[in-house]
Each structure stands twice: as C-alpha cells, then as structure tokens.
Amino acid sequence: MSAQSTEQTEKPTHTQDETTTSTWERRAIIDLANIRENVKRVAELVAPAEVMAVVKADGYGHGAVAVGRAAVQAGATWLGCAHVTEALKLREAGLDSQLMAWLHTEGTPFEAAIAANLDLAVSGWELEHVARAAQAAAQPARVHLKIDTGLGRNGCTPDQWEQLLGRAASFQDEGLMRVVGVFSHLAVADEPERPETDEQLEAFNQAVALAEDAGFDLEVRHIANTPAILTRPDAHYDMVRLGLGLYGLSPFAGEEPARYGLRPAMTLVSRIANVKKVPAGQGVGYGLRYHTDRETYLGLVPMGYADGIPRSASNAPVSINGKTYLVRGTIAMDQFVVDLGPDIDVAEILGSEVILFGEGGPSATDWADAAGTINYEIVTRISPRVPRRLVEGTWGESGE
Image (tube, rainbow, N blue to C red; front, side, top):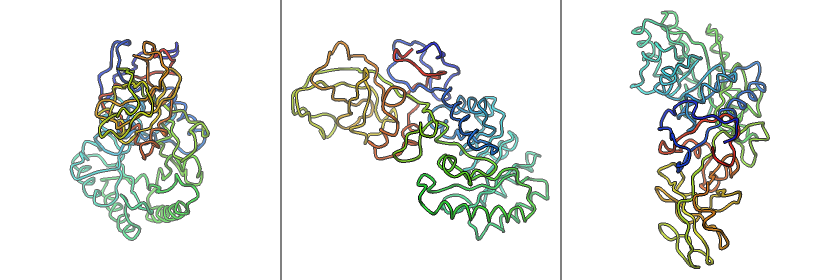
C-alpha cells in the first residue's frame, strides 16, 4: 500500500477482516477516497439538487456502512436502500442522515422503520400498512409516493394515482403520515437516444402536478438515476439518486467512467496458487471446452463462482505483474485457470498478485462484457467469502 492507505478503517458488514497482510488469498479493496470524490463530482454537477447515495445490496458489494459514511462526509444528504432491514442496519451503525427504503412486503417492519425515522416509499397497498404502523409507533410516517411512469415494476399506475393521493391525504389529515416526496424510476436513461425517457419525464411532471394540486407540500421530487444524473439535467429536480456512479462505474456502453470524472472504488485481487507446464491440446476445466493450442503454462487462481465470479466469464482478462492474460476454460466454484503462455519464469509468477479488475488492471465492465452481463452485477455479486479491505487513496503494486 502507499503511504496514503490505511489499515481497515472499520469492520466490513459481512466478512471477517484479515489481520495478517502477507497471507491473504483474495480480497476486494475498497477505496473510500474515490467514493468521496464521486459524490463531490456529482454534487457539483447537480447543485442545487441534493444527492441520495444508494447503498442497497451492501453498497453494491462495497460495504454499505463504510460507503454510506464516506458519502455523507462528501456531501450526500440522503442515503437510499431497497429494504427497510438494510436501512435499519445503517441506523444501528450510527448513520443518522435522511434515509429512504422503497421495496416492501407485508413482512416489512414498518413500525421499526418509522421509529428509526426512515422515509418510506409507497406504491399503493403499503399505504394502509404504513398508517397502522404509524399509529402503533405513535409517530407519523414520512412517505414518498411512487408513480409508475413507464418502467412497469413498482409504483402506482397513472389511472390509480389520484385515488392513491386521496387515500394518502386522508391519512395525513389524521396525523398518521406526511407525504414529503413523489418519485419514479427511469427505464432507459442509459440509452440517451431513446425517446422513452422524455415520455417518462412528462408523465412524472403530470403526477407531481396532481400531487401538488391535492395539497401536498413536497420536500423532494426525484427520478434521476446515475445515467440521468450525467446526461439529463432536466431530470435532476430536488434530488438525484446516485447508484452506480457512486462506485465509480459508467452506466453507458463503450464509455469509460473517467469521461464523467468518476473513479472506480473496488479492486478485486487474488494470487496465483499453482503454475504448471502442459502440452498442446490440453483440456482445461469442466466440460473441456478449451484446449491449449501450444505447449504453455497454466496458472491457477483461487477464486470462483462461490466468490461471485461469473461462471460464464471465460476469456475475461486479468492482470499479473503488469501483463494481461485471459481466463481459459469454465470457471469453477473455487478456482479458474489462465493461460500464461510458453515463456514465463515459474518462480517469479507463482504467488504473484492477480488483479481481476480495478486499479492497475482490467475493469469491471471488461468482466461484464466477457460474462454477457452489466458492471452493476459484477461488483454487487462479489460474495461474503471475499474479505473487504477499506483504504484511503490509491493503493500501490506491493499490495500493502
């Protein structure tokens, strides 16, 4: 590590920290300085709109508590989670900023959410549950009403919107809730040329107007996700929801995050666990779907789909000692193989650091392309078996 780096700044939310620095086998290095820089960049871009840092799914695999704290330090005034249970863990960790949760079932602990001063999204059926929970908690709920403007997932349909507004107004008059926001979610903002975003914004404006006509004094109107933050200033309204961009990744195909001033925060690393020389025609991995085309050396990396590495990512790149090599054969539960070529120094490469993606290596998007998926999934799926190490600032090639 460089002199700027720190030891573990707090325990990861879902893994045990490795206390020794010379024996690690795999880890995800999370650069909190980059998280802060991404928030600052977006806050400048969208001002005077506020920034909600979306830390659902354990901060897209980066660690929700650490990322949430760093985001607030950098100027995010809100945090966002899918589930109330995620948000309550942030409260337990001492994060007291405005905090919203938006995906519920009948088993959602609404009363605990209200007592913890969480803002709750409501699409329809939840309204009565939230009202009962507010009565039990003896505290009015803070509610954001969600309008489905075209994504077709959660959210109230436009034909039911006025009815939802009426029911919410009744509960507000009873002192059981306060409607503080109206929001929606965009479907194709990562494809800026498509017309549906304009259609969704028009529908959103109509829904907001109806809510204001119904007498609601809204604190925040919000619809912009990361791609809309970067390309649609007309979608910023009072607040934006910074998800993928918080972690320094680009939502746009073929565009690097640096174009938008974003810095990737996760670097995934392992070590070469074995090296051996094999003949031409050697089969590699389950199903023997790859055969060597020459005498070569194979290197074994002790990470697999149990660690969140996509099984389908054959041909994904890794970096070893500054050189790029490709994954060969089917990725297994605990390991995969790279073809190192015929001319290597076995003693030099055995035990060497392998950068799967991040600082000094390929990108999460490179792995997404190899796996036929998106970079969101690549970072989010890294499993609890991979320890997270929190650092401040760029980490050096020595690893510590």
